[in-house]
Image (cartoon, rainbow, N blue to C red; front, side):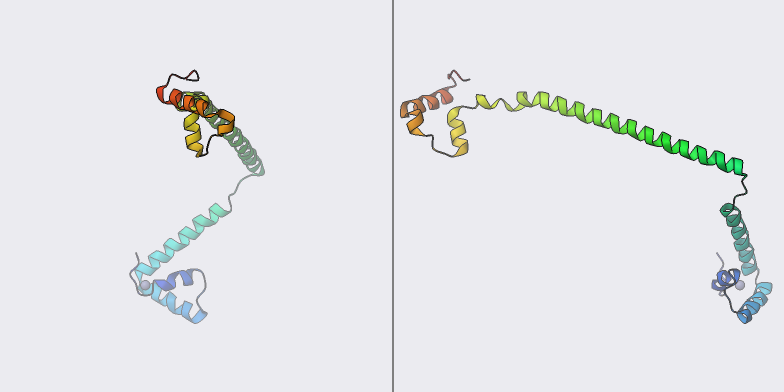
Length: 151
Ligand SMILES: [Zn+2]
């Protein structure tokens, strides 16, 4: 870390953003300040390296091969993604199948619920005209004792 008070001017000088008078004055400072001189050298080296990265010197043949390689890699990636999606879909299907297969055993079939309980859950009066009072009483007894033919 450059602790010189004028270190902030380094980037501007390096980028040629200082006015001519200020630039000349900063060059005078550079001759007396080894820290700023060293950092300027470092900045110039970084710029040089970035410049070589930005403009790679590659032959058209190498560029063509790189392009083909990139296209191939991209296609392979899509193929691999499709395989993963297929595997996930198959897993989801399998889990759903097992879940649906086990569902009746866990909850019981609806027809096993006694009639009186269904009436109670629906909170509606059974239509006495349809069932008759005796039949309703039988339903309730069957449901309570568990001796009904529908169990
Ligand atoms: Zn300095």
